[in-house]
Length: 412
Figure 1 (tube, rainbow, N blue to C red):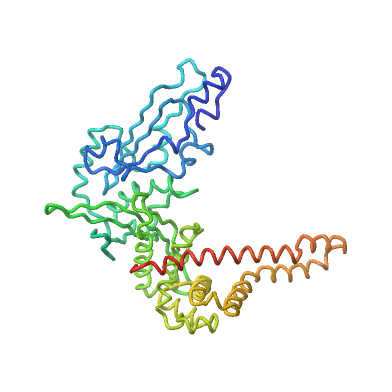
Figure 2 (figure 1 turned 90 degrees about the vertical axis):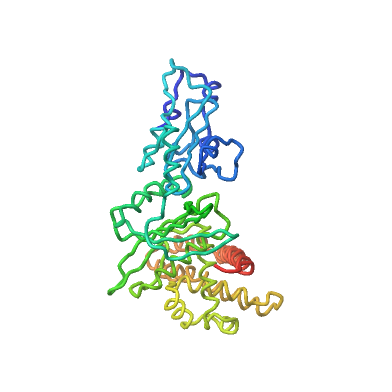
């Protein structure tokens, strides 16, 4: 509980509000290579704010007890050693019955790897960071805008990686809603980390860019099913295509394992669903069963078989990718062709209603006539049609966003 929850009479309401800060407005993250980066106040390139603060500062996402509050969280660019600096112009009066929130304590509770509040210690961390090297095995690399990026695979059996991950994972609290830390003693976790490799004046150093975690579940009779859990590209590097590169590398690495049956996702966000659809569509678009002439013939078992064998894509996801690629192959100006496409997608969307209809028919045996009539009215055909039409429009809109990206991409 933060100070606001226990606020009481001795502080007048007008003065009380002066000591309340919106957490997301006073927290600043920054990656630093040298002292100049720490001391610079006008460098917005590497400075960014959190998206969520409730897991640290409570559901109201406010901090009580300070005026002019500013919380700077500095990180070394590679190893992600952290330095926290809290500044404020005034605190709540000492005679108040409510103490100001203990900011450092609240942050430390969500920072298992710890942090320093000593500037000189952080300067030493920045110097040591020059020799930081990623833990794990290099599985992929690519160039973008004359920069080199590398992707590594590791498990928690690697102590060096385990230590690094404890610092890396702290970002999920600020950028993934309702996120929780994973068990770093469980070796069934597979982690994929992305770095920028920078070479200058004969020296090489690495910058942390993002990561993907997945867990190997059992798949009958003797295989495994990786389930993607968390994916995060750090804010300064977002919207640059790195997420697609990271997901593609993970797919390729998993597909090379003969024991992997397919790849699933745990509670995907809207943004990740779009990313996954993009990567899967790109992979499937080169398969024979997904060529335009085949797409127009309708959904087929060949599509499911080929996508699963080549890219470990689940049957449910294959169906979505079929619809997406068929929309791209459909001549929208041809009214009959476009109508045929819409009806096929709506038939899939209507499946839950058909199942519900069968359930209602069974329910009729156990209800009085007036009770059954009331249930039918709440499930009117008009409501179903309206819901179905809206669902279709939402689906097509999402597909079009992915198609637009497919049209613009060069390589993944």
